[in-house]
Image (cartoon, rainbow, N blue to C red; front, top):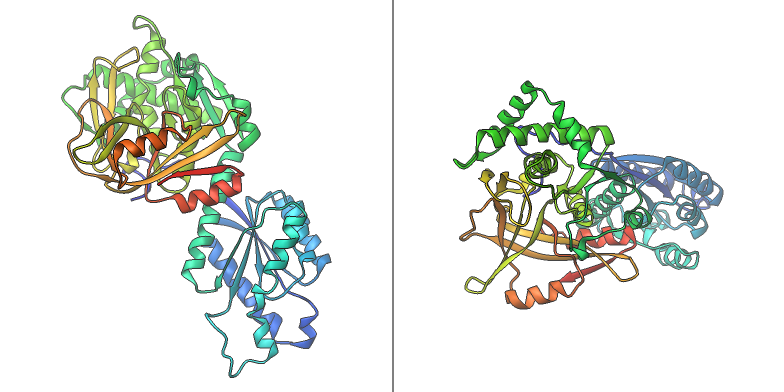
Length: 478
């Protein structure tokens, strides 16, 4: 199950991934074999069509036959500001035709070698027919040249209708979408650090330095003033939406739900006004004053935002909101999660969190529960309760090393059924196929913070592509 959406909630449309496409072959062949170039151009058109079906904008600069045409195409791709450039090796071509593309564009390059069919018809093929299958020939040359000029090399080989190859290409395009979301992203950081949580403290400058994008530092008053402007009609409509999306437990007080609805509308305006793609927040407050109530009333609104594609989490966890953004853009959802308990009888790790959750990956209709106490925090109000959809899942945390470098930390498991707490938290029972204690020790030793994103599906293969494009280490606990 992916994060397709929740009935009644329209996802906020992100910027489309922009993929540049350049195809090429050695121009010396065209006068020798007149039928070769038209055949290769047809293959290039088929690749362009298939790329476009991967939910991306394709910037096709056409077919190049020598290094001058390659340099001109490189300039067009540079101006296009692509998130990924796909170089289609239709037959043999020299490295001088594609190295300028890799050097000038500033975007990562994926070389693809997709021959027309699974194999040649050796009994009937002449030299011209063979050359259409010769895209593998220049691949080592490209790898050697890319390394020597300081460009990362990555490739996918196969044939035009090879679904295995297209699955790999799809991972690279999805990873480019993640890179774009981070490179162009605006990430809200609202309030202040939860006192004493040294592991979650993040320097916003490091986010811009390693991912790009912008961290917008916000105050709780930025929400408060917007909440105060919410009309009774807007609050009533948001209450009606909450009743449509959630099952309401009898513990939910009408006044608390109405307040959470007002805060939710205010949060929507905050996201719109500041152009936010993610949000991390925390505010302690004091003695029930309005700032405390705003901080305590954000769970409903942040859960609705997360389901719409703007990941939001508590405890000022900027790195986890970014991890949630990564998993969301991979179609996995991604809910705010930490360890809760180990169940040695059933061999599972129980994990989840109080506060915002990704409603699109709930195993069923999510529950709103009223709480007199938000444990470890001030205030009271409504909280979200559910378990993640049963089946394969992936954990993704964003660790930070001593020198400030971020790392991706991941693990694959499966959410299984069984007894769950009913305390207004998300809770999932995750089976990693090994002793829960040993897994927990190994996971903790990676340096991951005590929060992470829990998403649906096994995503390590996709995260390997993400790590490559971001230039980060991926640590996988198996």
